[in-house]
Amino acid sequence: MNWIEASAHVVETLGTPDFAAALIAALRCVAPFEHSVTFAYYQDRRPIALHDEFPAWKRQVMVEDYQAGPYLLDPFYLHPPGPGQAKLVRLRELAPDRFYQAEYFRNYYVQTELAEEIGFMLDMGQGVHAVISAMRASRAFSAREFRELAAVLPFVAASARKNWPDLRPRFAEQPQAAQGALAGRIDAAFRNVGRNLLTPRETEVVEYTLKGHSAEATGRALGISPGTVRIHKRNIYAKLRIGSQGELFSNFIAALEDLR
Image 1 (cartoon, rainbow, N blue to C red):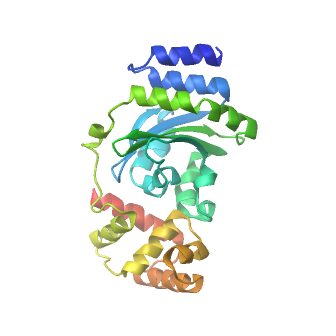
Image 2 (image 1 turned 180 degrees about the vertical axis):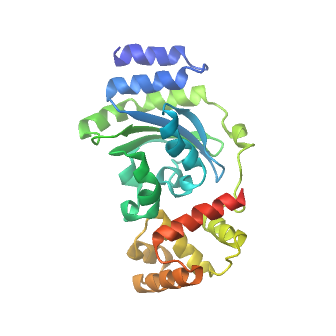
């Protein structure tokens, strides 16, 4: 099946349970990839998996574990498209400077065993955005493949918006964070487990650290020196009686679970 035939099939399946699979099959006519998952996001609610094709063992990591909390550190979640926008982005283009050394990558993302992930990022209206991810396990997408996938972005966006026109009500039953901002949620999570020990500035440093920002990038964002950031990190570790960023990440995920 070629792109013309596959995209015609996508149109035929609009409004049916077969739409998402048909859309992914059409994208594979443009460039092959092994895995795909589509998430919808609204504020800090638990994301909704609109479609995935993983076997049960892999779905546990890629969908269920992700929904439990790591999504809050995912660049695809943290950088939604603007109103009416649609764009195709490589994950590494969105990620902060130390993303691949951060614990989100080392403790969670590395389990996905992916060589590269790209995402069709779509504003769906009413504050909701969706990301249709195309994932490769062995090699990155070439520049040519990326350009060819970007060329069909208008079709992907129009068909997805037509098929999922009113996603916001579906988030009504999704858990809501105790506070809206990530920093507030981290602070609430630590309070929930009896560790109300961090200052507001230290909580901000925790947020940037968990997202994958270096001391230099954190300092620029907060208007302080990298040295001051490192002092804050030492104080955070001492107050929480931990010795590594891995333990900080584990505390974060465990505390989020306690908020549910």
